[in-house]
Image (tube, rainbow, N blue to C red; front, side, top):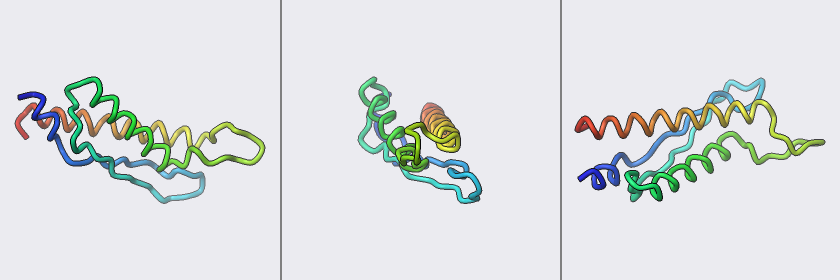
Length: 102
């Protein structure tokens, strides 16, 4: 029963971030599908982690190269930290909701 609950737990997560670039007030978001993932297995959890990481990097534009360095900007690192924490919080809430019958 747990596998079934975890596999159907929610359709998506919304990855939210604070303003990604200094001087902007724009927040960004991206939806991450959890459809078809069995989060009760290590493989399902690993796939979700990969989706979260890919979405976080996209939203935070962390792959953009800056002139003169290959290092990520502080704003990009902060954005990634916020995005990952947001996703982890949503996953925990989704699992808790399912355990409580929601």
